[in-house]
Image (cartoon, rainbow, N blue to C red; front, side):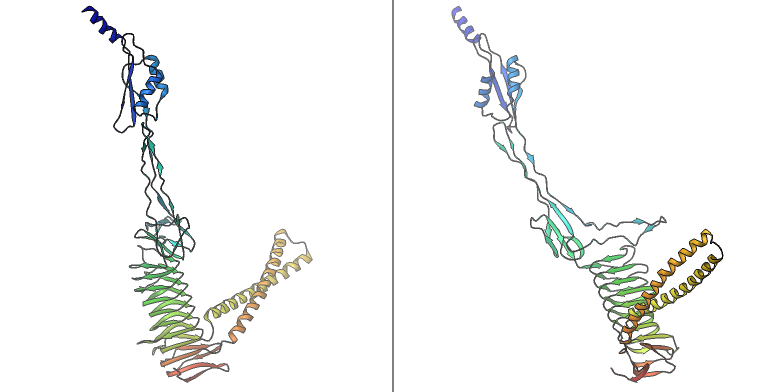
Length: 473
């Protein structure tokens, strides 16, 4: 009986030390607990502990140094972490950097006097052909991880951003950049980056829109309010009324209604200007002007002015055309002063008049300087000039030389324009109904005042005079 007990005791005392190993459900870490030997059993050693890990398939992220440390001290309390997984690194989502205003936010500026500028809001993202509009930063794939059993842990790749090309843009070969193909307005519409050659104002041009500056065509569905500007490299089309505003177009201007300028409106275009009516407005067109009436305005066209429709009326102001003016009625029964000029490009005529005025002023200044120089020279012969007089003489001589060169340049310019205007004798004025007294007609360098009603006629230049002939149209 005692022998049997001793045998069991001996068996128990001889149990070697071992390890207990566990992994979490996701295999992200493994823990180890050292079990002490019993009796004369051998304590666990590092190699045995490592073999146990390998038996259970734990082959990655094993921290051998902590095993060695715990084995050496035969740590037998709580389990300790012996292996850790390498967690995956998810990819970053791609993004798009936009180089134009995609929100349409207003840029309010403060003037020097401290007031807020509500007119120059810079709402339109104008772009030029070739300009970079957007660049995509691609998503990254990320890096996979590895669990403690050496198995791959899949990472989550980054998402590709919405990056689609619309009309009038160019996509780079690598697909990462979008640039403008034409001048116009950059837009982000339905997730697509595009450039529109037309900028549409859905209502009025006023404080809500600010001034409009666009590299393409501008269409205004409402009115253009007084004090605001619309500038376009393309055409300007206004469905409502233009008030005391300024319109500048490198193309044509189309006014579905007309302009009530209140002597403040100014319209400039390199092409044609077409309107129902023009009133109290300054207009310069590089092509033709077409309207139902022009009232008390300053209007000039490089080519023709055609006033047709129910009224076909020109009354008051100054109306100039390089080639022809065609109207139903010119002037009024009240004898309203109305100036009509044809036969000379209005732009050349204006430059000619400006050059003549500048030449006259230059000659006057030269005469005054000549007198000043003469007086100072006489004074210097009798006695030395004071310092201030010497300086005055030097300045006067230098200014005289500059003005003399300016005089010669102006004379050459005037001579050139005079030769150009001498060939402009084909201008005509067609009146299908009546021209009233108070009208002053100028064709090239000839002038005629109308003192009596003249019915249905065509006026033209001949041998230095204005001839009233039969109506040609």
